[in-house]
Length: 152
Image 1: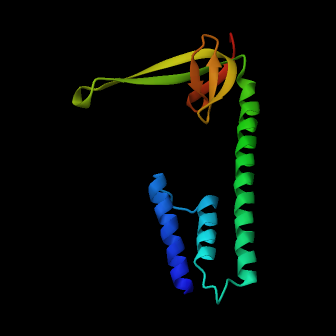
Image 2: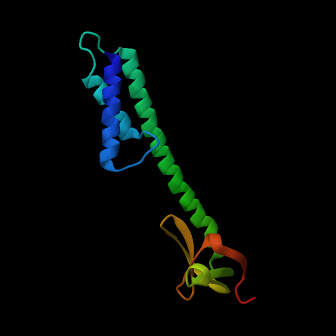
Image 3: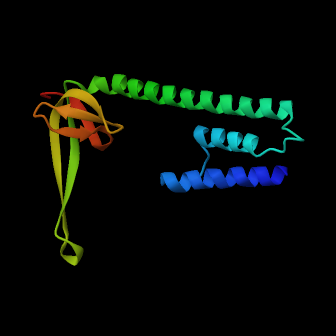
């Protein structure tokens, strides 16, 4: 009986993943909770789940939730730390190489142009840190090749 409960729960989770269109390789907190609820719904009434087993599963769910919140908090902290670190670029002259490709296939030509500008601010955009230059253009800080005092 326990095997059918687990296989029914697994089917429910697999169906949930298929309908949501997600191609996850790991179960999330919602999947874990659905699995637990399905297991409880399909348990044998004459042999209900052991209290210790249920408490253990709830503790795992609680741990998963806390780890998810901790990860989210750490990511926010890391972004704030990056902003603080890159704020030292404000007022500095940076240089980078901009590469563009013209044409396609065998006719494609790649051109690299060395560029430079003075950083006026730093911003986070789509999970990346960008230097905003005095002319309004933006450069991903990962592309910066050199940093010097402005006007030097």
